[in-house]
Length: 341
Image (cartoon, rainbow, N blue to C red; front, side, top):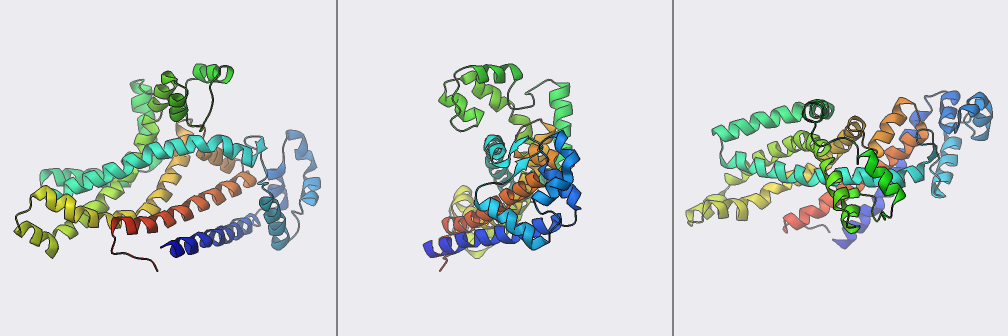
């Protein structure tokens, strides 16, 4: 098992290398002037694009540009972001906690809700509850994330005035900036608890409800459908019928025997689910004015900030490659019969 983890971990740099080749290669479709705009740090420099092109060799071939870019990355320099007007690494360090806080607040409910509803639907097969949940799952999986987000903003926040958008109220942000509030993790829910500021904790938690709900409704619908199909398949197998014939209670049959095996296809789906959730976070952060990496990348795409987009894509590639490794490890935890040599 340890050898397998080491081998898979060594594949991650190769994945990032191929991904970087593709992204830098796609940048060659832009003109040198368009690529030079990514290096502009102020409006005054726009008049000197020719000097920027020569300085960064943007009129050279693909191999020269890739070598220069890779050399800077190995030094820890990911470039300058025109959107945030600061180095890319600085922006990632500032905004990553916000995206992590949103992702964690959505991921756990996504899995729990999807697995729970899928199990309920399977155990009430073809009943009214099963049919209602199937309709809800189809609607949820068919809805684009941005549509759900806009509905929640318009109906819950705009109409009812509940929860709020952004990470914290502006008055509280000013108070934290001028007061003695230590940022241990950058996530306001945890930092609020660690600083003993319950007002910060509750405000941050309240403003996570709507963006997390939009992700949960859309993404958990897919998990529910997979869990229902997998559970129905397991309930029809011989070992389940044998357990029932021995007189085991229905709950013991479902949760002690069938449920664990039914989780394997759900784990398989975790990789694509994470990809959809990351894509949803980009839109969610923009709509809910949530200052994370997704909002930053969306604004960079609108203004063709290629330095920012390249760093964002590489970061997402690292997350996805690491997630796939964790999925393979989770197989062994759920099903001890699986072994990696």
